[in-house]
Length: 384
Ligand SMILES: *Cc1c(COP(=O)(O)O)cnc(C)c1O
Image (cartoon, rainbow, N blue to C red):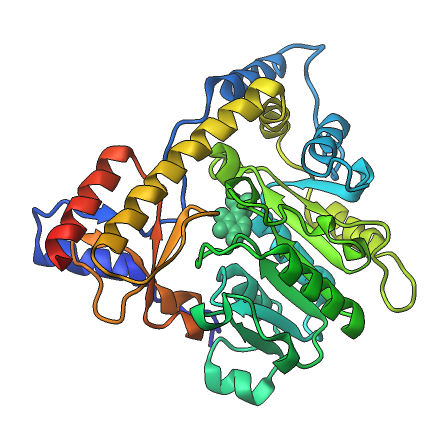
């Protein structure tokens, strides 16, 4: 029997609603996918690279598995400036989700993991695929190799680490999908300290770091000592609308060592060279354009647009008296919603992200402005 669940709550709800109301215009605020066009300065660089592949001078076949040297250097100088992350610590990839799976291959099935609860489903699901545990709570209790770290309004969405037993790997996402909360500097210092004390590796997912509006750390390497305990994975998906283009990266610092002193990066390099032949050269040309001064400006503009959507959603739910979390540092709003969510506006049930998500819905700010406005109108009609 397969271990992974097959039920997809959003698709099921949407289908059920459409069959009941065939003329209904269903608006989805449930999807974690970008909707706005990629800025021209970025697509034109990809088009140029694609055309150059038709020329003798411009053609290239397999590239370095770790990525184009220029792109690795640009990622290091853009996102890790003054954090002493070397370009050779950066592994360019076809996306953070794919890297999460490759990291699971690296860690294997014998490790004990912890995840934020609720969290991005890929962490637990990919663990199950490599044979770590079951998704079912009773089996988790029985086998116990995935620890769910409860993140709820009562603890400011930061887990009580004193209740966590020894874990080898901690998946940690900030700003968090689905709760939209960003971890503060003090909290992150606490997490790094915990990893140091327990000999754990933190896999820090910073896929939403550019959405941060306050002074929350954008990278775990802003915390002293993090290079000895943390891997960071990130992506162009939510920064530049690259969910379909596919481009991301993972940082594995040379300072991160297994207990026998062997560098984790050397093993990760073996996995990357074995399971992956490098990111698309066209996508990498796009990535390089993203990190040019014009590209950075264009990315910031698109993110600003999604953040305006977020504000509309936050204001809508707040005006109706709901308890609303997140939104400030992420394109997700986490709404306490104990009853059944609205029928013509599809959101994502929080329980799909873990047991502590029960009673919440995740509302996504990815969407065209007209749809967001229409959704806000319907929500107001339904719950006023
Ligand atoms: C969207 C998302 C990613 C990005 O995955 P890609 O494979 O790069 O598209 C990574 N982590 C989280 C938490 C996400 O929501």
